[in-house]
Amino acid sequence: MSINYLSAKNLTLGYGNSIVIKNLALSLYDNKDYEVIGRNGAGKSTLLNFISNNFQGNKFDSKFEFKNLRILEISSEYTLIENLTLIENCLYLTKNSVSVDSVDKVLSDYGMNHFKEDLIQKFSSGMIKRSELAIAHLINPEILCIDEPLNYLDKDGSQLLIQLLEKRSNDTRSTILSSQESLNLFKSDYETINLNV
Amino acid sequence: MFNNYYIVKKEILGEYRNNTSLFIITPTMAVLVLVFPILSENRYIIDDNFFTITQLLFLIVFATLFSIRNPLSQKKLMRELNFGDIARKDFFISKTISEFVIFLPQAIILISLFSIFTNTGIQNHLIYFGISVIFFSVNSIMTNLFFQMFTSFESRFVQFILMVPILMSLSFLVAPIWLGINPNLTNIYLVMYLGITLLVFLFTNWFLQRDFK
Image: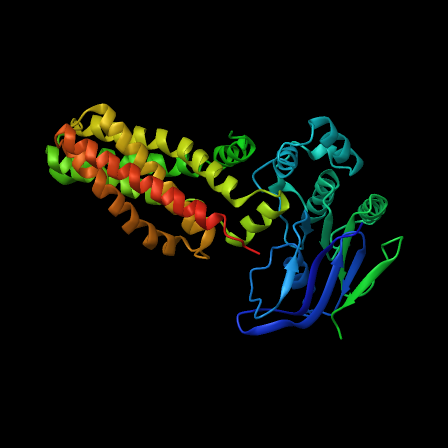
């Protein structure tokens, strides 16, 4: 059974007095994948931040309903803690709920096992993105939002992302991607939220 | 049952790697403590009353520097807590514990150094003194975290301006205890301090449990 975890009829979001998204009707389900597309400044990141409860701007008089699901966001600003090593980040962000062996295995799958004892502050943007994808794989949240999914990723990294999307789709977990134009990364059906109109 | 050791561990590891307080603030304060008696009275012994007041002043300066050493970015913290699905209440309590573990030994080192180098002592029982320092530490840490987690004052200067009056008012309850008032009055002051600690804790908990969505 699917859960309608976010429904809004007139979602208006902005910062201060400036409006970024105006009167957007939205209805998101936990068993469907979504792709948010829009030009620069159309409000893709703002919408993803809102969905993942990371939005700190003005919601004006928007009426919306949230259901409490585990939503994780991989945004263009990284979340990992700089002065912790990769393995420490993995254990901290999974609240020590996964074993070191399973962390090792996932990091190995994502090609990050050699760097697990290195501090995040020494990582490149691509390595950070891979690490965040690996942690998302470990947590396997009900909803995963990825802003500009291909940014910083090389060919292998992009392949890993596609594998993660496929795995999530098989587990009937929802993923929301945002980009300027359709990336066609999903293998199965998905819905497009176009912010250009 | 407290099962958020992973947050405490992360905070202490971060502090150990940054070493801002241990390698920068404590030595700076120690040097100040060393040169202060010579500058003020041109000798290594200072008068008792003057000693208590200046020791408090040093504690306030130390607590302020400690508070602003590594400001939390509200935006980054929000992302981190949402990413790890960590409740704000758990983070607050664990961060208070870790800050206390880092702060208290350094505050005791500082106060001891001050006593040693000025050749003067506290005029009350050591237990009363210890409890008052613990209350001061817990309260200053909780108020500082409250400001950092729920206001967007990321500038160290603004935090400094906000923290100094709060720490001064907290130290008003410490001063009489250190000055050696009689045991009954000391107990009353300590109970008052306990009341303030509970109030700060309860208010913060109430604030944290509000719906942020």
